[in-house]
Amino acid sequence: MGLDEQHQTTRERLLEAAGEVFAEKGYRDTTVREICQQANANVAAVNYYFGDKQRLYADVLRYAHQCSGAARQSEIAAAERRSPEVRLQGFVEAFLGHIFNEGRAAWHGKLMAREMMEPTQALDALVEERVRPMAHELESITRELIGPEATTEQVRLCVVSVVGQCLHYHHSRPVICRLYPELDFGARDITVLVRHITRFSLSAIKSMASLSDDADRKGGWNEGQ
Image 1 (cartoon, rainbow, N blue to C red):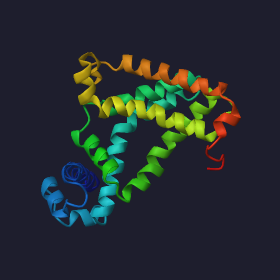
Image 2 (cartoon, rainbow, N blue to C red):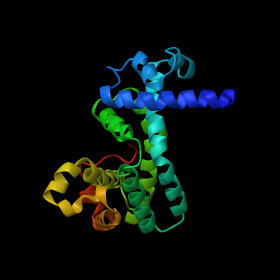
Image 3 (cartoon, rainbow, N blue to C red):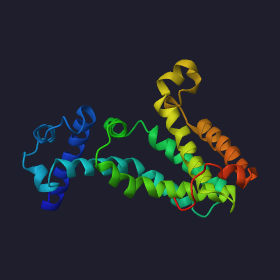
Image 4 (tube, one colour):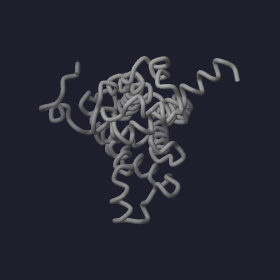
């Protein structure tokens, strides 16, 4: 094994080990020594590859997001020039495929859930680098569906609503599958769920075009926000 390959292997071991420990104990209660023991690496390795614990944590968040988002990005690229209806379905399908992916490392989802509940400074960079481009993409789809009269408030609320539906089926899965066992989408194909969320969202988003500007702008956000 060459030196570059050895370095890459050590770095990935540290990322994987750190992800598991951070997901289990949280950023504040995790020590560099614990991570290095988990990765079977020298305690100085974190400083060598990442600089410090804070930078390691930020890289772990990026790593988890990147590992789970590769397939999604290829799906989006393939749908770029299609109709907004097809692009919306592609977005929903890719997003659900990501969050219901039971083949990914268990710590990925757990770490992101912990970061949402106990946000750190690393979340700002993750949002700017990874999440905001996805939001812009969904904003573009939504604005095209509503039409040129779409307000900023309409577009942003629709974006949050689409993503909220996807996340609800995942985060509320323990309750949903007890209420309606046939809706345990984590255990079977998610095609039905993709179709439902897409149709439900399309119906709601397109109805925005029929709302009057005056009624919709009352108490709304400014276009410059």
